[in-house]
Image 1 (spheres, rainbow, N blue to C red):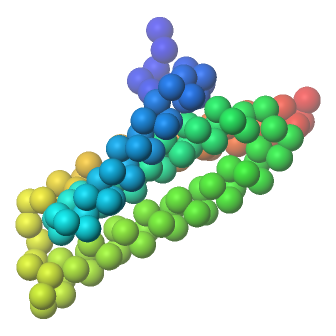
Image 2 (image 1 turned 180 degrees about the vertical axis):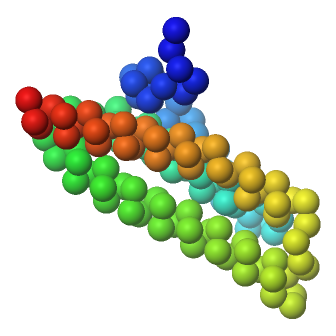
Length: 134
């Protein structure tokens, strides 16, 4: 019986859901231009998960996979941290309107896609490192 969200199980299906998650994440980020309380942190997390799926589908057997994934993690985790910090800063600023349910739900909902993307990345890094040792 496969474990809940087993990276090896879902990495093979990454080509199917990666582009869709990228499209959803970008659509929400574009919507934020007209809807200030759009869930931008969750959108960034979905974008990271989709980009991880697409990256693994495209470069899964590439000899430089470890370098590609390291850059991928640094870029998307950095962007996620910027979005997370911006939402927290806006909530704490005098004109930001304070903490509300929408901001809290956005931050909470972004945790699972980030965890899933990082889990896929680190599983692929472990697999690439063990293949290198063989």
